[in-house]
Amino acid sequence: VLPSETAVVTGGIIAARGGLLLPLVLIVAAAGAFLGDNLAYWIGRKGQRVARRWLLRGDKGQQLINWAARLLDQYGGSVLIVGRFIPGGRTAIAVGSGIVNYPWRRFAPYDAVGAVTWATVNSVIGYVGGKAFERQTWLAFVVSFAAAILVGVVVELIRRIAGHRHTDRDETETSPGPPAEEAKHRGGGSSRPAALPPNLCQPRRWHTYHRD
Image (cartoon, rainbow, N blue to C red; front, side, top):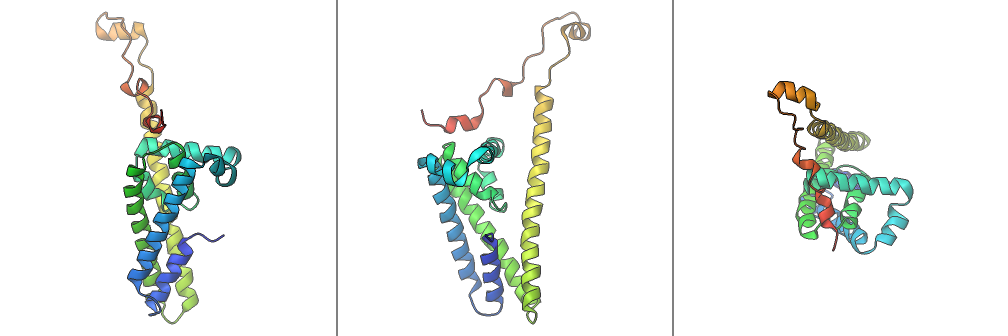
């Protein structure tokens, strides 16, 4: 199964040759992406059995749900924009958002921005490739698809680097303080242990998305 970027990039190349209007390609691609994501969201929200049975089966499916919930917890709705550029990940994030009851009023605006951004980037990539290699159709396809794939790879690398930094920061914040004796010597006789960081006492934000 080819990723949906294929159709959008192809539409951009055809637009470069005068077969389609670029704004039309962009609008159709963005609308399709937005509707598809919202369908996945509501399948996760209202039809969890279907989602777990057909879309996110087994241990791997549960890992994807946990991954989506963790990203929503760390980055909020902005992950819906970034996740649009990760093939496979976008479905897991949309379905996972529904399963953990992420509010639709938050989901929809972020997803709309992500859909428009994704459609714009991929259709413009196809259009530029089609114009640059106007007489070599096969080269226009190869270069445009490679560029679209590269965008997804770069986005995923940035996300992973940011995720590692976030994890390292959390580990630093939650690391235990110096022993009581050491603190006593440093603090001039006080043996009271260091206070726990606030994030250890607060529940994860995504837990609040669940219905009562």
